[in-house]
Length: 193
Image (cartoon, rainbow, N blue to C red):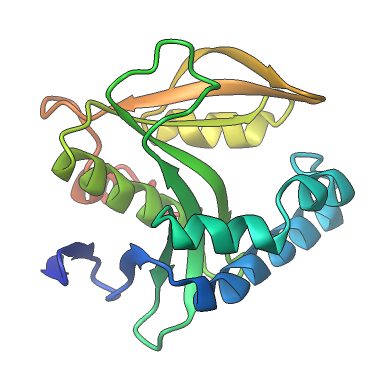
């Protein structure tokens, strides 16, 4: 049964979404490295290792932690399962908007479903902050990831480009009616990723 501890939603597996400290950033950064290796092994070109790590080195995540923007979903044993940077503003979205923005989402490939569980908890956090949307982007050429976000309730809103990166802007409405919930996603068989 879902409950709350420390103000953040908990899942049945007692995974906890919370801001990371600067000292915890290296453990979360390790998730980025594992996810890049996982993608390389499968021929997925979402994050080119050299380009991604040049743009988002460990120091970037330490700074995000200092600013209270680096979040992790932690297992009951204290190990990080998935991480993301959560921003109040994002220049990739031309309208600004009343939204919480998800960046750098990296899940432990060995923990199925943890990415979806993080996004559901991010939706709850965004609602608690009075936001109307949870927004993210993903690579235009990653059909599997785009379909995954679509199944999780993230509608396609348009293209974006930043340097060589070409992405799709996606948003999930957080209005009460029709908004994704953990229970609803589990019933639909979408508690994975």
